[in-house]
Length: 433
Image 1 (tube, helix red, strand yellow):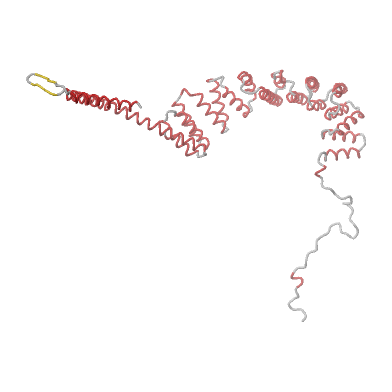
Image 2 (tube, one colour):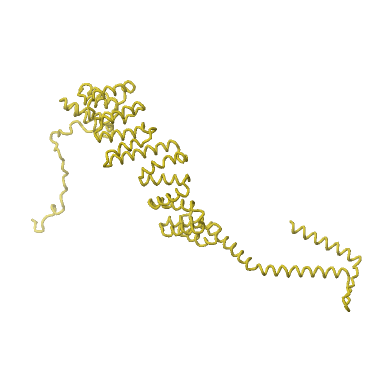
């Protein structure tokens, strides 16, 4: 628009000058020494304009000639940047289509001319990773570091992601530890560390990381609680397998009080105490845990403890029977405690009640064992059979009542009669005529 306006202004000025000159062209006399020059004013103005235009053109030509190398370099850079941008776009499209090799070639070819070589090399590293070319992947990561050392966090995060995806856990751990020093509060670094420690089974370091995860609010509260419980259950397991018997108590003491009432964690610790012959400690632990929250799994473990005073255990658990009268696990546990206290009638009553209410298979087995030792083998056999076929009656094939009694004039095993063979029916060559 501005160029069009300038053109019309020039045209109007020229027209105005033409009108003025047509009425009076004027007269100019220039005397220099013995030389005199006469001309019209219009011609003088025209010559001045032409001289000015020529000088302006020569000056512009000299300036452009002087700036030609720089302009040429700028043009080449722009052309290279355009090619690099086009190559990066096409390379990313190739990656989206699954053509990893072609994508890698396009991304690397003009990476040195790209305005963002970091993105080219990081994308090329992913393409090489998808081809299983770890050496090329690491080479592109190094080139990305060389081109932009200030982007160490972004480059190292990409490297850690690729190492984790390829199950290079030790290398990923080294990369993430470096990132932990560079950016200790980076939320994504914390997430990757959490994921890596779980894959490595490094529960001790994960336990140390959990407070940082809680402060940074990287993980939702419920998920974090489940992670914390899982971590301390694994630590208890490792402590139980340790040769030092004190490691188990240390692992339990390290567990936060907020999660000690978790049924899974308390049940694990009680089971490990029982394995170590510390049944009385396990009994106290389970009793306190059941007061804080009811859980059938803890009740079942409680019935397996071998304490010196089973009658006291029985009395303590019978208090819960008022609140859970139809719980088959409670009835099974009361039956077991009654058996330990040698209260056979009460044990039978509790176990039969558990079986009647659809109790677990263990209730059937305990009742059958009790009946067998009480001399009631037939009833015990029936209970064993019920335990074996419990819940599977609909899958049993129906059988006739007289399966073991063969009918008269009927063989027990009917063998198929083979048809006569061809050579048995043919007459011999020298037979009677």
